[in-house]
Image (cartoon, rainbow, N blue to C red):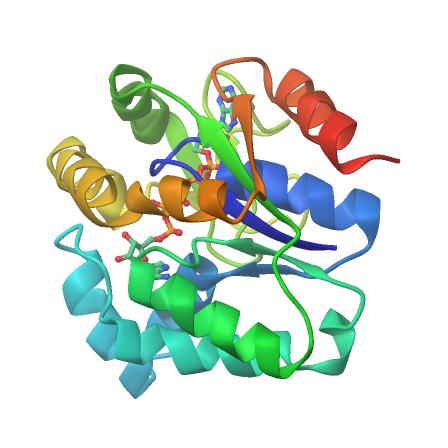
Length: 214
Ligand code: AP5
């Protein structure tokens, strides 16, 4: 099952993608997490990506396409995967389709998690991310057992640099301009499904499972 998660920044794509990955036993591939790991490790890719991410801009297509195309060709992706944060532009979607066609494969579901802009800024300012394993929480909606400490691995939680309100506004504008057109793109391919992301995260997950099946 090859799944793409669509939705505005902070819509809950990552939260749902992790749950899908656990339930269906397929890898969760987050381009945002890949970039953050590269920034943390001080790689050349991380240094380049950071200059765009800190401004709320997309990293150029040429820095992300090959990385994902190589990743989905790996053995653990044979049964499927859930892509979170990719594609984000029409050229990225076309590159993915072309790469999948070469592997004799295609996208099965593009899951659009819908959350209005007005809910997003509140969500993002309350989000906390683990510096080590990338797990995400929310200080109100999804609190950790011990404040500031990851339930999963015990590392410290931080507020992401790009979750500050001004940067979030920029990310939303970029989303509407460059990523939202993918909704039409996948509607035309007949693979788009939509869920109400304003519901409680377990309800959102139940709606997704209902679509994907047991
Ligand atoms: P990325 O990390 O992909 O950021 P994003 O798409 O903006 O998405 P987020 O991770 O911010 O949010 P999410 O939808 O995953 O929400 P989450 O589940 O965490 O990318 C970061 C940057 O990297 C980009 O801006 C860009 O610069 C670059 N980049 C990445 N991929 C790229 C690409 N393909 N091309 C170019 N550039 C790229 O949830 C948000 C919060 O809400 C959390 O606190 C969560 O706990 C909480 N929450 C989740 N669900 C619910 C719920 N149902 N109710 C209440 N709270 C909830």
